Length: 87
Image (cartoon, rainbow, N blue to C red; front, side, top):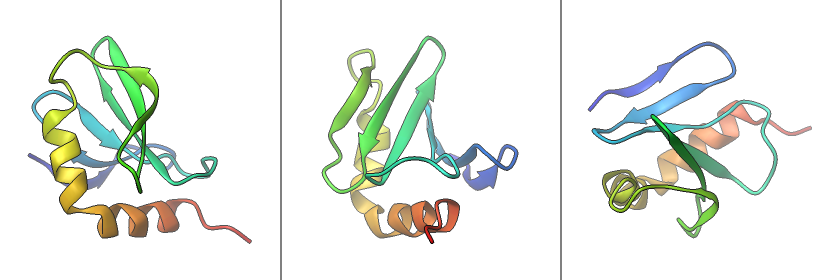
């Protein structure tokens, strides 16, 4: 697993997993969420509930990422705040 690096200013990859990358976009819409992206699929996940709100994944495609996210909600909210400052 790789952690906390940026792929350009608008697509920070927070964590990489075997099946996907967890990305938080800069200047994105509320509610706080992250994107899981892989070859051929992507989905949007609410940080607070860890529910997929848009998109889909193959069976098991999000398991490792969602387990990690559940243990790291505070970090995800911190990163959301850094990348999505509101006036």
